[in-house]
Length: 245
Ligand SMILES: Nc1ncnc2c1ncn2[C@@H]1O[C@H](COP(=O)(O)OP(=O)(O)OP(=O)(O)O)[C@@H](O)[C@H]1O
Ligand SMILES: [Mg+2]
Image (cartoon, rainbow, N blue to C red):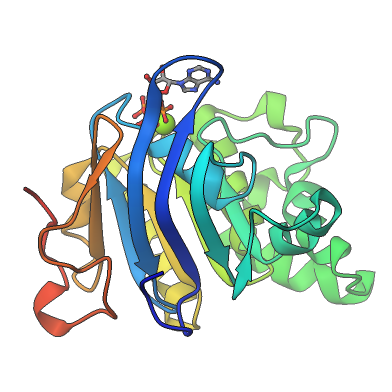
């Protein structure tokens, strides 16, 4: 298997099919290095969400091997997966906020899961809600928030516990361009603290906003990588360069 021991994620000839249909992902091989910032791009239906579902462990591949945090995921028993998932922050394309919890309690959830004391939770949660411009909506239930507001709560929840990997599916799909840039800055700030970031988007304008990012492009379930940027540790000449055939 290619890739060094210091990789955080490694896919080797991964394929995915839903049911008996054709493969929606084929021969996917790449290595993610800790502390890097990746964009996953490609047309609607190219397989971005499917790839992220593999990354946040909602889905097992139909073939191939996936290593994460130095462990072979395919041979892990099901009961081991929640422990892995706690190390991954996820922004779902459809948000998936807990409907009966307020914005505050949705964002606080990952901290409560880690066992943080209630007295220590309020400040980071309020600071995060303020960053995403929702401090005045802290007590609102998700159903009473707009799509863009729900998306910002989902992002706040995904980053609050400083995960080792952040996996975000079209995280700026419902916000205006100004807020999109602000949210990207939040991801960059997390990235500068060491989190490996993977952001799926079909908005190519977004890619240029993060100059140090590496770009993975999916085309009908195939990943293109002619520069080798996704197989070797990030090199200066690969940064900001689109892996296009
Ligand atoms: N649960 C499912 N069962 C069957 N087919 C699926 C399922 N989920 C996705 N697909 C199919 O897999 C392919 C890739 O879908 P996916 O959602 O990964 O694309 P995407 O790149 O995220 O698209 P978008 O930009 O629209 O979000 C599509 O052809 C889609 O119809
Ligand atoms: Mg998608």
